[in-house]
Image (cartoon, rainbow, N blue to C red; front, top):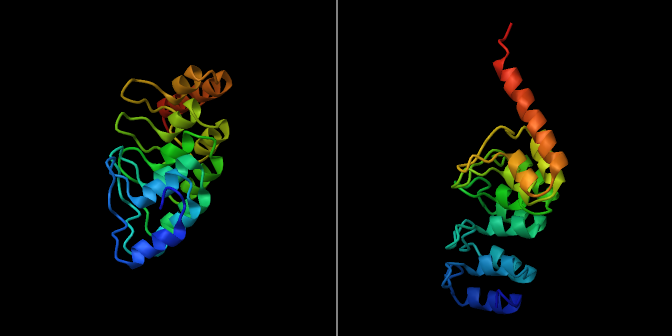
Length: 192
């Protein structure tokens, strides 16, 4: 029902006592499925149920907020946060997911919600690296303006500039390199 956006069926099942947090083989809840399939009415129905776990984590380590972020769905992201979804999860975060796509409106909103702009994934990748390598350049610009650390490197010793370069975004790579050099110079200059 969640997959096919059958909100009436979802509501009937919830009213009949069905646990909204039952998991499929990939440990997805109905909320994960409804968000992934962009079944907006089913998402609304599930969010009306007080028993729906908005922070459930599937087998891939994804929360419903992460899926809303990668889908670029700001309305669902707002509702999830209103219901208590955590903006900062250890490891991959909703900001990593938003930054990986052309979802600058979600990047800006998550930053405004207090998302950790330098959050480290399990391999040390930051949202800025994701934006520079996979997302929209305006997402990278938002993160830079918010103070993202351009000098960080992941476990493979790659910086955000390296991600941009690999993606063919040479202008962004040059900008990130220039910012990193300026930061290193400022850090090396003794305070008066």
